[in-house]
Each structure stands twice: as C-alpha cells, then as structure tokens.
Length: 262
Image (cartoon, rainbow, N blue to C red; front, side):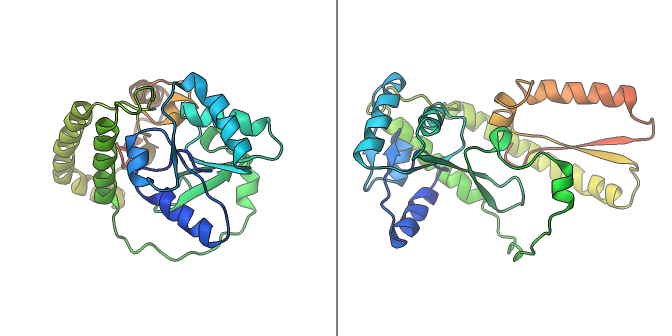
C-alpha cells in the first residue's frame, strides 16, 4: 500500500512494476495532487487527520496489507502509518528518500530514513566495506521536470481543495509564497553565474587553502525540522560562522555550499 510519494508519477511507475511482479498494490490519496498522479485503483481519504488512524487500520485489515510504502517518514500521515506498522508484527514499513548516498540516486530503507535510518552510525563500518562501481549518470538534469511536476501537483492540490478540505500538508501551499521565492532564487542564480566560476577556479588552483566545505540543507527539510537542534538554516549558519571565527586558523576559509533545491 502506497501513501504519499514524490511529486510526479514515480509511485505510479513503481506500482506498475510491482503489479507485473505479481503483487497486489493499493494507494491512498490525501490531496488533489496525489489523485492527479495516481487516479486509478486508488482511494481518497478526505476526513480529518484524527480519523486517519482508524481508517488506515480498517483499510489494512480489509485488504490484507503486509507492507506500507511512503516517501519521507516525518509527514503527519506517515507518522501515523509508522506507529501502526510498529504495533503490527505482520506489517512492514518502507521509506523512499531522495538519495543521500549518491547524486541522481534514491534511497529505500526499512523503518525509516535520515535520523531514523537503520544505517550503521559507526565510522569503522564504512571504512571496511567494499564499494561497488555503478554506471555513471548521463549528466541529464531533472531539475525542470521537478519544477513541472511541482507546479502541476500544487495546482491540482488547490483545485481539489474543496474535496480534501481537511488535508494537512507538510509544507506551505501558498502559490504566491513559492512564486516569490522562485523569482528570488532566479536572481541569485544569475548573480552566482557571474561570481561562482571565478571563485571555483580559485578554489581548484588552491588559492583558498586550507578551506572547509559547509554544505547546507533546505530550510524546510525534516532533517532540520525534526532531526536537529536548529529550527532554521539561518540559526545553523550563524552558529557555524561564530564557531569558525573563534576556533579556525586565521588563514582558513569557510566555503558555504547551497543545497541544490534551495
């Protein structure tokens, strides 16, 4: 049984593959965007979130569900599904996440991802495992496909808001909010094209040495909201810069890297 997936047709394609493998596949839609990308052989949940646990338990029992698959494990509906799976020994819980191991890849883990991942936290484990070579990415960017899918998803979320009036989204849904931020991001992108090539060239030529890379996360990502002591990237950046200015060598540089989706 699928709950919410990535914005776009990904879950639909995974479901088709599972069906060809002989699995019975079910899908619960929570908003208009979910419904648009997975309209057939699915059911809509339109009631309040307080009624979702009982609805989900009944659905699992009626259809003999043995596995729940989600994208991200910290959305309110997915948290409820995880708690139900934890209390049922015959029910497993699987989570997709945008790949934090390799660019252009996804992760698929049992029970949780990020801070809830079962991946070993021991440094020695990663030092002693063999790394399997993989086919290199063809370099094709999916950036604009993601934008297109996102626009379609949020449009249908708003168009069917009357049907899913009780739905609680894990992020802001205001089109004006995203439009203003995308415009600002475009301005910053154009500005960076003038500045970054020279900066990157200087880094490659070791003109900024030694330097430390400080990669950022998206401000609304659950790794910040759920799995860190910070509530925003702003406070995190402030903390790191203060620490760097106090304890780093005077000749060191701090290179701040934006998240690609920010």
